[in-house]
Length: 486
Image (tube, rainbow, N blue to C red; front, top):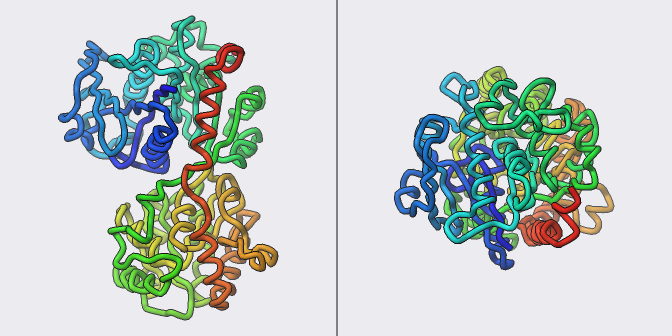
């Protein structure tokens, strides 16, 4: 089975969120299962050294007013196809946003080009390699099914994965001409979305199969609350929609070998976590207090993530004796609110605005609990890191959070299956009560240790999910199924 992955980011090369971790991990597991996977990725500046070590497999000529080529290279256990188009991707800073925090004005050209070249590779191959299936990820690759539909017979089946439906890639309708999207596809049943060109809408309407990153999120997407205006389309295509739970790379996220920890540990040596905790306290200016839990947050600071709720309940957390170490950036008002809270509750609340991959590992390796109070969360990975490291997640009952954390109710505690605290409704009161529950559990050392060990035993890798993708690819290419049914 040969599968082309097309995505806008991929760890460890370029990362803004969980999408990169997924693209960096799944192909490796699928290769172990016998598949051949190539990942098509823009050649951002972060990939300059990787690009130099590659081989040009196609000269693409003029691509939206600049020359482009396709470069193949094997790096970090991945077969990469790099779209080298400096006029589109060789620019500093965020891969999606300019210095003012706005979307790059030519994002339709940048990711339209990624989709177009993804379709070209799907149809013509790269060198001697030609995919049986093309797998597009999020809106940045969403036009691939449209280009394949325009190509007609001979196109391989396509699948689109929704990592977060809140980001849809909506642009003025006029850009469809520049991008080569024909009027016959700019319809309600195709790429048109309330008069605009919708990259994700096009992908979902015109692909052969749709997946998202957890079973619960797949069900939630069919409702107006979570479908973000696309619930009607997804309801109509519900037979083609499935939720396949994300995992993490257990080699990268491994407390027994993690080089970013002060001290590594396992479930049999939990006392060693204390040195990591001490380092966190030092880095975040927190007063040592072993009698109460140290909570952490590693997140974008947005209302989607429920961080405004956390600001509201911080006084209760501090009053209970808990402490908070927060690493993240995002909405300016939330950044200001947490920095003010760090001043107000000096010694109990520490805040670092920004992102630091190594520091995120340390927070997982030394905190007692991680807070993830998201209003919606397609899957979420930070809670999986927490489970892996024995940093018990306190999460909202939504999306993949509900699918990956076993709430510490009496039955789960008695059977030693509890791995965290799950709460609803997703309100300030709900979060306040969840934090109080976590503190009460922490006051029972035997129960807490049992939960930590249960969490660290919980399977968080791709062993269960990757075969589901492989089975789906097989169904899509089997005569009489998949593409033939569309």
